[in-house]
Image (cartoon, rainbow, N blue to C red; front, side):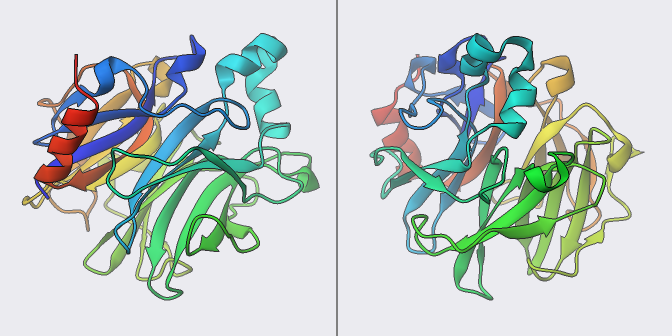
Length: 310
């Protein structure tokens, strides 16, 4: 791997085009450039006609998948006004939007797949991770349900081998009276590290485990700029990636409370989780909740050829 692909959305829901799939690339993991002349690479024409929070995955068989939230806050604003966010959590889609590709440049049509429970009010920020224990992908997302009158967001999970057929959804993270959204997971040397936005406290937590299904414990040394990470507020949409050929990880957090898009934080020891602000990162636009995936030079060249920059 010699470069990176960032799948994300952009902006501040000021128009319907911002809530679609954008691709950005980098050769060093620090300097990012949006492809396709700054326009979306993929546009959803299914469900809510908008997508947010895309997750891109290199499958075990070499195929690529993008899964995303079936949601357009801009479109909801036209019908629900100031209640758009509240409405989206109690009357939103029970589906995720899925794309598939064999080469990153030629993608299938968008498909709508129901993964949430029948009584779910939303299906937010889906991500996936390969689970060797079950030889399948564990897909997870946040939902509110009618059982408790949509009181808190919980993280649910389901298993799939093909992103077409999914097992029955089940609760994955439930902190009783605390809402959790935006979970992301990375594996390093057999240890899983999980970052989740505590929606109640508006902070991002960090946990670790040797198993995806259980045994999760807080990383006691987790800090952001010297401050306990679970007390740093105003961020969401965590995504993390390891820099190619370096013993360094970058945690990107969407500074949604200040409408500033992603901010980078780095560490040289993922086991400790002591992150500090990075000053050498540049983004050519306001990137919003997405994911970064390492790619080869050939894949990078093909993306540049198919979706040129400005």
